[in-house]
Image 1 (cartoon, rainbow, N blue to C red):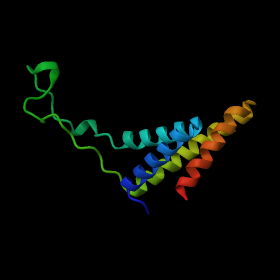
Image 2 (spheres, one colour):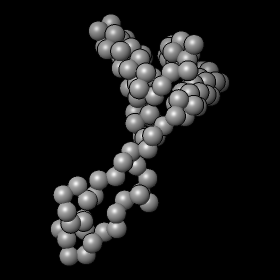
Image 3 (cartoon, helix red, strand yellow):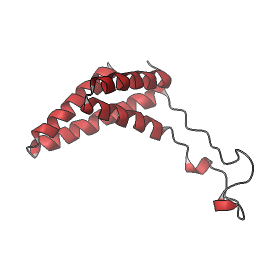
Length: 120
């Protein structure tokens, strides 16, 4: 199983290739997937230091005192996240097809192929 850093490196390399190839559907799905991973790594609000009154903008005193470490994801977390991205696109594709929006459904189909290829 790939590490989180390997997943990110693979997604960034694929994004670079797709930017060169100018394939908008692939660029979109890769950017959204990388953003989903970054959002999942965001620090929890409960880990932030308490706000000190009397400090500018309700901050804390001391250099770096307001810094909070990001969450460390496991490879399983990333796999679940990618599976969720795939499931969301599958559901949206089904919905588009039921509404007769075949062009949008086809775009989602291409995105699904790309994500499934990365998961393999």
